[in-house]
Image (tube, rainbow, N blue to C red; front, side, top):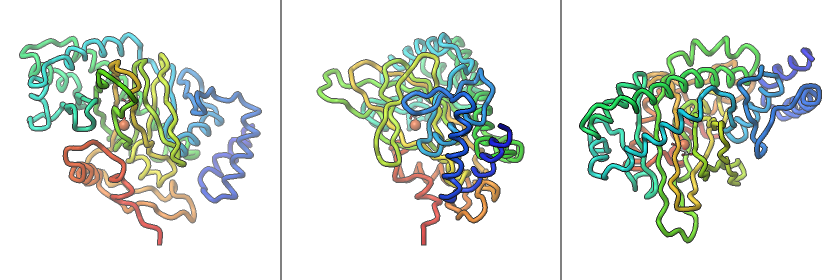
Length: 351
Ligand SMILES: O=C(O)CCC(=O)C(=O)O
Ligand SMILES: [Fe+2]
């Protein structure tokens, strides 16, 4: 069995067609020997209460390569914490527009995205790390003209759990790229990552004759994004062939999206997921998106070991902050839309 798993790690480093088929055959055999990870709509579920098996790593790698998405369960974030944040966030979203705009795009904090920026049906508050308590508290003081720390304490708790989870998932993604990759690259490349949280509220039109886009198709600029969605549903991810599939909500399940930074760093071995949110009824939808990103001044450049022998470099090395600015400048007043992705910014065009 050990022998078989070593074969997998050897071959995963290479992308040539012949070798790739070989991996699939080896893993198919492994899958029979070891228990297969559970899956949901063909997209695997990472169960953090279980030891990682080579077969689970392979499923995650495959999902991250093909879709840029998988599910996480037994992650240690309680349903109660999410529900409390959801109910306290209602107090923010229910405020009059004028009040919310104190944090809007023309304010100094710029932590509120009002309706009609990303879509008519989407609004969002942003909380920045590393001190999530201070960030949340500053915003709530501006909105409510008083200090109420309950909300900020919960945000702090949620985000500090998200930070731990993000570190764990990045390590797992590195392991999925091949034996020794985590040890080699976690500290040198990912140690200075930082996070921010977006608290999202969707409200469809009162009369819905057809489904509407709550959030148009986009990729995230992060390394990874961890998403909590309530029970309403509507999140979809696009396959390479252009087919949309539902990422259905399920209690206790978080969604992991690969973002642009990890796509570029892994030289397209991991795919930044193209996703959107469709609203199918007039119920409000709530989600929490935690973005885990490289530090602004990091130069993103796929290491040779990740590239593998004979594989072409897909991206010119670039500074993380320059990409963020590129997205912002090209999308003045808009959200992160496909069309201005990392490929458009730093992709090396095929000759
Ligand atoms: O609300 C969701 O399910 C997705 C949110 C999202 O994609 C984002 O905030 O980037
Ligand atoms: Fe997103």
